[in-house]
Length: 325
Figure 1: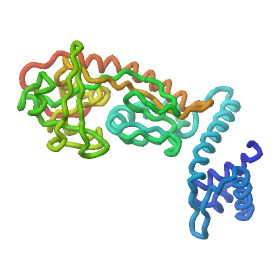
Figure 2 (figure 1 turned 120 degrees about the vertical axis):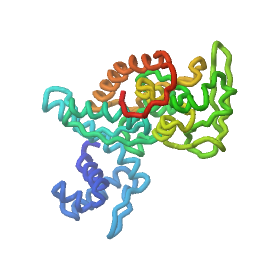
Figure 3 (figure 1 turned 90 degrees about the vertical axis):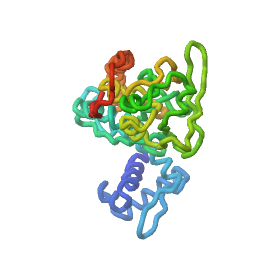
Figure 4 (figure 1 turned 45 degrees about the vertical axis):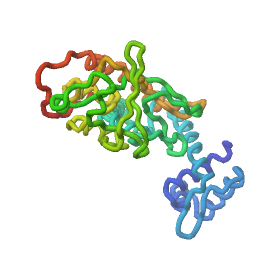
């Protein structure tokens, strides 16, 4: 395949620019030469990579699949050349990261800013979504997700433990009281987050070996597919929400939120870094992984402190503020 490397670079540039002639000019090729080289590549891989017309250049399904692998291979070659030139594993290039909306906005963004200061030749593209990204088709290098992944086609590296809790604002609890048993939740406003509106939501609890389940009345609950909005509604006193402690650690420390029914445990959802299963992990991605492990370790103590903090006395309905863990 090394003899096709120039053709592969042309293919990747054409996909990026949306123009074969523009890609050819960038690589010093005439329009005719660029067209001939693309045809040669398509013959070599036995697939049509572009739908070509006089007005547009559009990737076929086979082209989209091949593009993701070509980009990964070219990035690996660029990293290898950089390592040889500098005598070290220098990080450079773009890292495409996907994370959940709430965690990405309130915690991960600040960490990525720190990482770019340490490695100024690295640029980052951050996609925020509460659905699981397709690492291949969405061209994601690293996805940060909560829970135990079941997709065997990706590598999952656990970054930190993660406790999920029910939470509400001090003002909401001052007005409506604090539930102590799952069955009591029926008389409280709830906030739920789910991708498919109207589907059943079950909150499962355990205490001293006793398991209980509460079916959230979704018809009367506030409902969203965005974790950041669910958190904002909870801070604003709109109801009780189920959230990751990594999403609300700063709110617990600042007493904008309180844990509801702390004696009852919910299933944990450890934080994982997901990346494509391949024999080569680019230097920049490996360094970001190591950096994130360190940051999770450093902040875990703050999360534990927030969960262990005694409840403040009196009326807890203080004003909301902004604090990032």
